[in-house]
Length: 604
Image 1 (tube, rainbow, N blue to C red):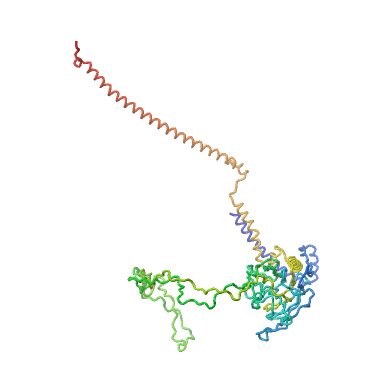
Image 2 (image 1 turned 180 degrees about the horizontal axis):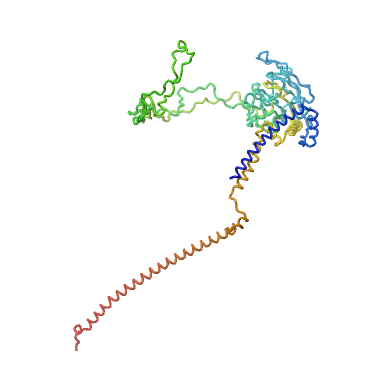
């Protein structure tokens, strides 16, 4: 028990010393600053002398930036490493049905280095301003036509300041004769919209395509189902994330974030509303008949309220068996005026009315079971039944829930190849954001997965490697956290020392065995001798029990044999008595037969 308390005190002492040591270091740092200000030359000499003796951690491996280069055929690539917006067109349009002050697309775009970048020279497109409309676009090297090859669009986004409300999605602008990038706005026709979007606590990753109705020629937006993955981290961790959309000619699609699939499906089955309308629809002109009965249960029309049913009986009645407690103070009110209260000096009876002291609980009632007029407590009325209602029975006329009849859908069509969308010829960003400094980089549109993966590894992969090299290890992160929060030293010490304490507690808390030297000082037998003696005593006790059992058995057999002998001798005695009884009778018979009177006369 003493050992447990010693360990406990030691742990507390270690934690206290750690915090004090941290505070002393802070104090010493402050003293050093004062000394350097007082005598700068001496301080510099001391630092230079101490440099050889101090050990510093090895520098993190340096990652050198190189602009990515596409490894195959592409329709569009942009890394912004030239530092200019060459090839990009800023929109000069205005939004319709909006006030002039906010209708202009006057949001600012710039090519900048990313904040806190680990790759000097890596530049990107930055949405600089907030609470403004932004629109910028660029032409593809050639229009993309949906035929037998997949579509892959990929780019990077970093919400450097987090995101309050806004999007970072791209639009693939449809190839039309009317397309004018100088007037790019929210209603400019697009083929696909893809990318992250957030407002409030709704985190989205859009994939929307505009499908052309083959019967009417009108376009309708089709939205992919929401991904099951939690997307919040991608918006809040202030790291660069890679967004990829893969659309295949067999109508399947995949959405990836950081080269991990977060959503997948098929254009025919996983879009809302569906690409193809239903074959049949409900007849809009069909009406439910007036005599249609949708009631599965109805009140029993033959039911009659029982004569003894009292609908006026109250639910609660006074308890007639209740008795007023002894000591109940009927004449004392529950509350009385506070005798210590005083009328305020500024009380004006003309304005405030007559002053009355505030009410307080009657002190006489504290020792009594109650005060005031006593009333019987209320209990449930056993005769209460409430309002009578007839029981419900099955409705023999029930016809089910009415539905309008089905008719062929006049707008039905079947498009089994929704992948063959409208060709597009430009890529654009048309955004409104309440957060500034959204960073875009490394756009690519191609048809080969390997080309997109190589582009990602040379761009986003390099950023990821640089961030990983710059991040401290687990120990470094723990030390940095403890520098900001000194109380973490206690947590660390307890975390490390607690397992040791438990091991010592369970291993050393048993009963201490005496040593061999202590056995030599006394006549007490050692453990091996004691165990042998215990075994001998056990064997001896077992033998004695066996002998006692054998002795008991012999006694029982002897008693049994004696009983048998006794019964046999008794039978012999009885037989002898019977023989003796029979013997005198036979002798008397012979004597009678031998007498002369009993002899028969002899015939001559």
